[in-house]
Image 1 (cartoon, rainbow, N blue to C red):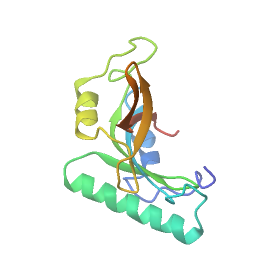
Image 2 (cartoon, one colour; image 1 turned 90 degrees about the vertical axis):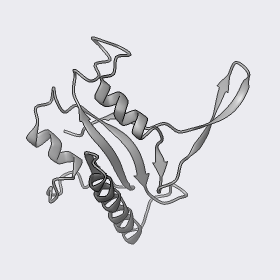
Image 3 (cartoon, rainbow, N blue to C red; image 1 turned 30 degrees about the vertical axis):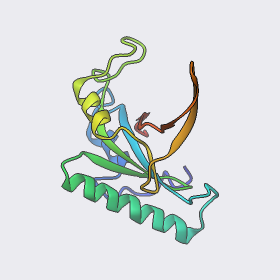
Length: 144
């Protein structure tokens, strides 16, 4: 992102994770929410500031509830993630399909990917036709 070089001012900034933990222990996080304009157009500076504020509030709430939550501010919005996972939790090359108990627990607690705090549905093709399902949370790499 354009502002990827901005200083890290919060321990809840996802970029801080790679500073404090070795890469093999801090490779992934579970993306559970994104704050941006509802129409997904590029936000104004004011809208972007609001997205950032909302994501930081969401992280604070998740942390009060016991989650290891982080925010990541990008040029079009802010992502909220939970957990820090390494190669022992998920390694698609050496052990495809395996997920540690910690990762499974995080997915069970946060199964959906929210947009501006609300669940999203997508249409998928199944053997019995089209079906609407909730967009699932997703494992993403922690930025370097």
